[in-house]
Image: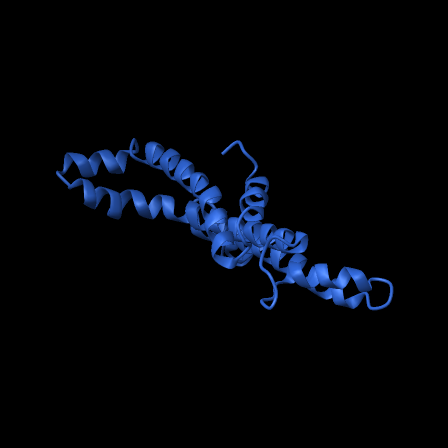
Length: 169
């Protein structure tokens, strides 16, 4: 996890032929440890809570405790991180395609479109501008969606989504 994932992707994708499958494999291998570490930390914290201890005391099976009590608590965190990670992976793919070691023509991505449009910046600037703007807007939208999901899925934070007229206090 301490090795930069984008650098690893550059090294691995430079050696074999750049392809969509290789890109997906490299990005998955570099991002899985983040999910495993977060899941482990959340499970270690949640399993010590009173409701899990009560379920154990009532004789619930390990599978029931995991799927009925622990998973619903950690799932919102994982969904929020996956949304943020989608934006990160999209930016990484755009950067790799821009450098020429990501997705190759005849397939097309926004990073490849920016790369191909940079030769025409003085005469046809919009060839690079619009794909770049699409990358920026999509990334910002995913970050805002992730922030909203964190509030909406967390029971201690979802009061922020209520209109002011409905709030108690």
